[in-house]
Length: 231
Image (cartoon, rainbow, N blue to C red):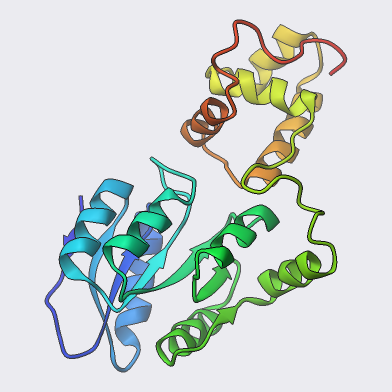
C-alpha cells in the first residue's frame, strides 16, 4: 500500500523501499532538506508504479531489491512511466553486474546503504543539480569494471558454482541450512559457507527473493538439484 502526502512547490520525491522503518527515516531526512518534499512512499513494485505514474515525481529513491522483485524491470518501467523523473538507486545489493545494467539504464546516482546520512544528502543535492553521484564503494566497483570489464561474468546474472546452485535449489524449496546439511550429508557449517557466498554474489537475503532468483535461473523446473555430491 502506498502513502501519499500533499504536494508542494519543492522537489517532489517518491521513496520505494520495503523496510518500513528505513522508509520512514529516509522520508524524515528528505523532508528536512531545504527545497525537498516526499510526496509518497511504496514498499512493493505494483504500488510503486501506480504511485509514480500518478505523482510524476522529480526524484525517485529506489531500492532495487523489494519483497516482490529484485531485477531491473521495475527501473525500466519507472523510466518509461516517468520520463521526467531522476532516479537515485539506494541499495545494499549493488554488485558489479547490477551496476553495469543500472548505468546502461541512465540512472543518475548509485549509493549503497552503508553510506552516511551526509553522503545520502549529498547524493540528492547533486542529482537535483543535474550531476551524477556515486558512493565511494560504488566508484571503486565502477573503476574495476573499467579496468577489467569482463571480470563480472555474464551481464545480468551472477556466476554461481554448482555447489552454490545446489544450495540455492534447496533454499528455494524452503529448506533450512540444517535440513540442507542433512539432505546432502554435510555439515551445517559447510552449507552456511555456501549460503553466505551465494547471498554475497546475488545480493539477495530473503527466502522469497532467492526463490524468485532460482526460478529465473530455471533451477526449480528441475526434478533434481544441480548436484548432490562433492559439496
